[in-house]
Amino acid sequence: MNTPLLQTCDVTKAFRLKSGLFMKPSVHVAANSIDLELARRERIGVVGESGSGKSTLGRLLLGLTSPTKGEVLFEGVRHADRTSRDWSTFRRQTSLVQQNPLSALNPQMTIGEQVAEAVWVHRVADRAGARERAAAMIERVGLSSTMMSRYPHQMSGGQRQRVVIARALILEPKLVVFDEAVSALDVSVQAQVVSILRSLWQELDLAYVFITHDLRIVRHLVDRIAVMYLGRVVETGDIRSVYAWPRHPYTRALLASVPAMDPRVRNVEPPIHGELDAGKLVQGCAFRSRCPFAIDRCTSEIPALHKAGDQHVACHRAEELPRSIVSRMEIA
Image (cartoon, rainbow, N blue to C red; front, side, top):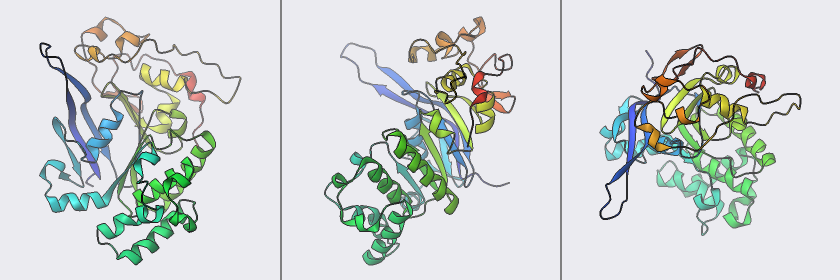
């Protein structure tokens, strides 16, 4: 049996919230009992509204924050068991691409210096060799190596994001977490970056987790999808299966909210009413107050992930819901 590249086992992350002097301390559960596996060279999308726990999950996967409960394993090794040397090796094999490239780049360093930095810091090559590798990687993301002497403020948003991607891939990592990596870009630049990511995935021995709220983009970039709501994974499965027949009411509503290019397609799905309410985590289904299909059972029993069709879904009525209009959406 092959060991997964990445695995989470019942991972939970709770944050203690600040309160007043005479107020009872409160806790926010950002990630709740998440079980996830990622194979080598697999691509998984993590989607959901802002506040659903996507970014917290990404940080847990990379060991940037420690879980309150459960464990994260990379190549069979628990994060909690890593020594300093293990962490150094892990950092060379993983990377993070964040949403805002301008804040991710050092304004006082040239582009070439920032892309090359990881190579000589990890002693993969000397400074001259690091610069050569940086020039080659910058050209692989669609930029000219002549831009290496520029500073971040001298580049456009799309160019800066390509630099951040080049910096993340310079050591040819086994795993990259893209956290809303294209959401700040305009549509035309998004398409260019998506094309670059698809090409680089084919060229490199790479697996990645693509975190986004944009279901229009993610369908072009992943093999599998996990839908999160208030810290829980409510549906997961092959991207084509989920888009063809979403089994969870939340997934259906998210997909129905994506504008259709065909003017003949009309959205007949019930819209999502209300906002995320962390108070619904205490008992029953957290989505019940916004769900048009909720029944009495939803108020008292938290639905567990179980197989429904080709997916795994946390919904008491998953097998009852008909095929959705969003099955008409195409996946490239």
